[in-house]
Image 1 (cartoon, one colour):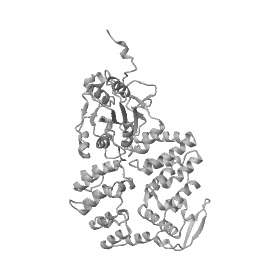
Image 2 (cartoon, helix red, strand yellow):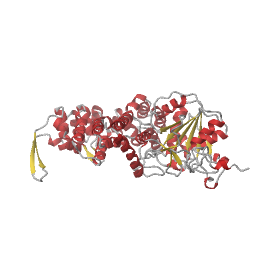
Image 3 (cartoon, one colour):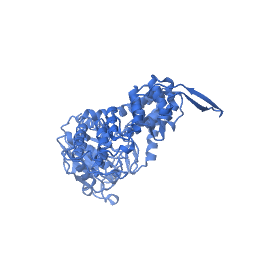
Amino acid sequence: MVNYAKHVSRKVTPQSEKAAPKQKKNNAGGYTFKIDDWARLDRFLVLGSEGGTYYCSENKLTKQNAKCVGRLLNKDVKSGLKVVEKVVEISQAGRAPKNDQAIFVLALAASCDSDEVRKVALEALPKVCRMGTHRFQFAAMVNELRGWGRGLRNAFANCFNSMPVDKLAYQLVKYQQRDGWSNRDLLRLCHAGKTAPTAEHQAAYRWVVAGADGLGKRAVKRRKSDKSETVVNYDAVGELPRLIQAYEELKGLKDVKRVEEMIREYRFTHEMVPTQFKNSPAVWEALLENMPITAMIRNLGKMTNVGIIKPLSQASRKIADTLGNVEILKKGRVHPLSVLTALKIYQRGCGIKGSLAWTPDRKVVDALDSAFYLAFDAIVPTGKNILLALDVSGSMGSPIANSPLSCRDASAALAMVTARSEKNYHFIGFTGGSHSWYGGTLDQQISNVSSLDISAKQRLDDVVRTISGLPFGGTDCALPMLWAEKKKVDVDAFVVLTDNETWETWAGSIHPHQALTQYRNRMDKPDAKCIVVGMTASKFSIANPDDPGMLDIVGFNTAAPAVMADFIRQ
């Protein structure tokens, strides 16, 4: 007897067809759930759209996310204010590997229709744009979106004038220009000097605009709107802040010993040191003494190249101690993805660009490995059985957050955070097979699921190598549940790390959320949960929003592993 009903059953539906009214066609052609605008905002703020995805260009992905942000900003004032609040929260907590997307969304908020939202967005400028680089980025972005009205000018003036003079001097010297913008440009636009709180602020601004030789009386020609010229006279300013005076001396030095002394005395950073001294081991040793943590991570290759990082060296010990300090990592907003990227680049012994090369120091490699885990929020173990399912399909080969890491590599490292905190876990890698287009069997599809010999005690580089060597194929996110059911594996929570572009159709294929329901029923596990960890900033998810036992979460949010553990424990 033929069971015709199975061909139209809504309990088991191929991924090429809708299984629920809320599903939409994804970028790969399969049907998944569309996440709401708030969830998409979270993904964008953490992962960004730089570099695009396997299926979607950077330009297209950015426009899609900008439209999403626009909808939230213009829905009503309450929604717009919530967007600004979310931007500040993620930026200040260091939840994202880059601040770029937070700055972009803040620029959109500062340019939206609502006067109140624009005002609050501009008031948040110092909280999100905490350094010169951020201010230049914001200026470049907001300049494309709106004019330089009074509100925007006052916001930038407040950024400068609200800083204590020592911090202001440091910022002006360290971050002088970027993205086609300079401090001189910003000061000429915002007129911060008119409301400068101290004479030293005023002197610092004059130094930026006119240089060290322009501190006396000045007569400046101005062109009016009718093209006629007028002369504006400026009085002499007072003494420059001490750091700027020292910087002017540093620029003219020839003696490397004096350079070392000044670096230690004034805590100069490598950006402030003249180029001719940047290959001196002694100069780098002096810089390392007070080097900020993010600069330390970025310059590991250079410090190894010049010879201060080497086996059993004092520099290696200092770096290892710093990378092992949770408070320093948190205060410096060091993101785990930045550490993982640094680990990959440092281990390869050469930069992505340029000719700089070095021999990696094992102590530094070990310290980076440990720092990756320390950069996440603390996790309370659940004691549950957790299946860590890594999507190793072809589309996961695209870069994550425009880094040298693929989504596949990053997903393995992220899963290790959970494995390190749990006793009962198992790793699998899954990808669709070659049978999809002509109707492969369930057994053939499950043969594309690999139990991965990954231990929580392994180093990150070993784990990444393991995952990188797996064969690529199509995407079938139902396979973890189907594999667990077929193998009779007792799973309390499936953690699926994927780009959500599931699409494979084969004889007996099924949607991921249907596979979870089927697993619950057939294994008598009604409370089995599934957490979908999104590795790209797309608008899709395999998680059914109507199923309280499914959770969609942003990959590489520093809070993600702790949130996942809380959800599993519930």
